[in-house]
Image 1: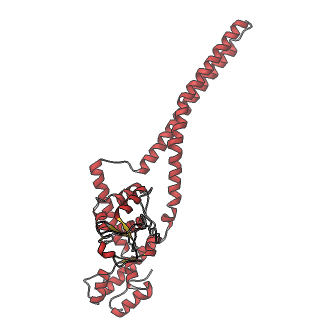
Image 2: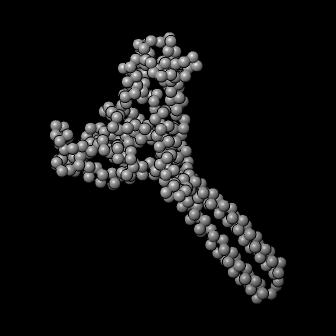
Image 3: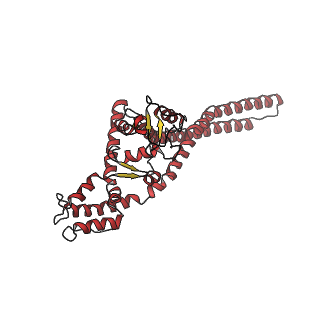
Length: 332
């Protein structure tokens, strides 16, 4: 882990040289090291929205709770059924034992007892089947799918849990603290003080934000609560969604000189009275066509037909990193 850079030992040019040497560019340095703070801000915003939902709709059980409750209920039902079956079998065994003990040489009496025993056996089988059939149905519908679902989620999320990126982010954040301290100044205890470095460099630190296509393609959203995430993406009433979509609605006059003369969905051109949607990749669609296409998608996501950019990934990348689409540039 890199040590904290002392402001007294490094000049401003040395700081910039260190950033460029370790991270390639100042922009890349920002992308890697400010990510942690943005994630915390985004997580705080998501938690506030969840609490607001709970306040309006009451306490809602999570998907995990519902899943494990169904598994637990099925298990309890199986245990009760096993005890019940044991009692029925013991009763049947007792009836058979009595039949053998009371058997005599009278053929009529023997036939009568055998018929009675057969009727008892049928009754016991029926008593076993009445709760047994619902047990099979409940197990097939609730228990086994829930277990399979949990196993799939466990193995699919293994990569995210074992990803060393969080530790790398923490290390980069500590490195960033040293570099920011060097730019802004640091006291004897290593705590950051007011900025006193290169004004132009400080301005870059505050204003430069950009996202690349590789960032979007390699981003793995957290889908541990998928329905909430899809609802969050599709609900146009949310403030972030309004801000996000407002940056992509453009006027007809803005696309007169572009190569996209037709909508890739309906293959018709753009009229002056239609709303036109500009995807982050730079391709244009009719707003109505794009919304209808999203509604027919199982997840509400949409990939650009011309370059295959995943707009759901793009949206969640901005959302999870706390990026403002109005102040963040997307490098295609």
